[in-house]
Length: 506
Ligand SMILES: Nc1ncnc2c1ncn2[C@@H]1O[C@H](COP(=O)(O)OP(=O)(O)OP(=O)(O)O)[C@@H](O)[C@H]1O
Ligand SMILES: [Mg+2]
Image (tube, rainbow, N blue to C red; front, side, top):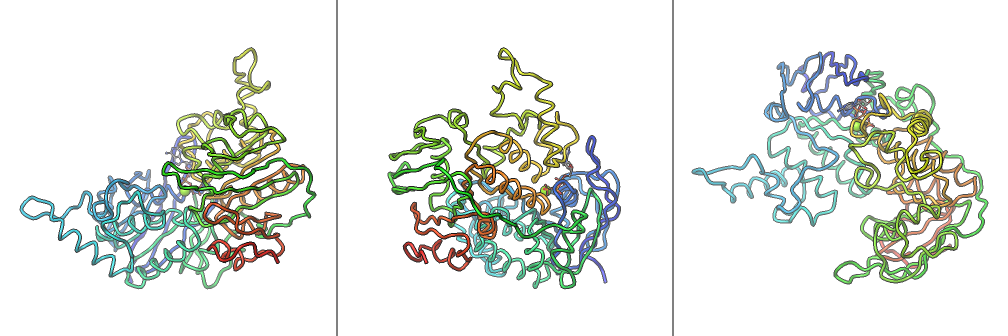
């Protein structure tokens, strides 16, 4: 029987890194294949080669038994491939339909045939169960629906093989469930799917087979039905990974962060944060749960100083910081791991060493008489690179060359190295591999034991439930419930997140 896709002996080198080291991969038509591996293992590189975005240094690509050489994604698309990137490539101000047909518009007598385009988009959406309104403007759509538009785009170009690079990283649990339903439907209709993920429960629930990469090589091809999360992570990391968190009881002390009667209105005057109060004390991790769009972003922006407040008060270590700049708040003891690492957390063009320093450049170890000490900076960078196992050829390399998960580790390493007493962590383990999740979780717990305060925002309920001491649920700009970690369950949290009931404190 012929494979939908075969890769033979793929090799790809970057300066100082062997990203793909003779990789073989064979996927059957209608199969769902998971591609997993540590940060920097070479997953994205391999998929970019398959999609014509990189040229391999050696190796061959076969699609439906035919040898192919892709010079660009254009060639790959013609051979029946489609890729859904993690950072969507849509035009926000155009409609869904316009985005889908962009660059492949049906024409009649030299004019774009809009009616035909609309009809075709609707047909495909119907056939594959992708519910979207073709007239909606992309900028008004939630992330999950935008992703559907990306999938629709590939299907419109008649993709037979779909590649998805960490498609669930930005989705809510509900959005993820509907994506999986769509992908299962596509596979049932004969499409071949390859998806990259760090979440092993997703591998277990969605894939037929899993391919594990480690340091640029394939370490295992496993049938999902015959394997386990433990076995997969062993092949990924080369050792046992603790998939559960052991948490010592909290030793709660004085208040570090206090938010009192905070109101944040948007430009239309609507309250995104409505008279909200909360406290985070030393020695505790407070989790903030909620469906995206219920004011969490505005709340965190107000606390960190990145966004304005309408009224209310924010105190950090007894200092009123309501109107203090971000730099001022950092000085007062605030560290922040932002959700949007590419825009808020990092400067892509700057070196890894500079990124590890950002925000601390005025500290004594790094500056003397206003000049930066290069030695101090290099040492600081090397220390963190080693400690956090950041995969980078040299500290001077631009951050842009790092893999997704290694970028996240740069931000996490920098913020933990800050001597503040308050850490605001938004999605701290998004995109990082299981071994590093274990490490970051341990760091969070140590930070708490050292008598610091943590406000944790995560879309992963399991992460919040295993780390937080108290969980606050946000709905429509308010805290609608508070649960102790011990009494929280996904069901209870889910109910509160949906605006279920006021204060069920049982
Ligand atoms: N354009 C580039 N220039 C230099 N090095 C690169 C480039 N792209 C990737 N690399 C390096 O190649 C290696 C593999 O990166 P890749 O992005 O494929 O990893 P990944 O498995 O997708 O990791 P993650 O899970 O973190 O996304 C990394 O060491 C990375 O730093
Ligand atoms: Mg990647």
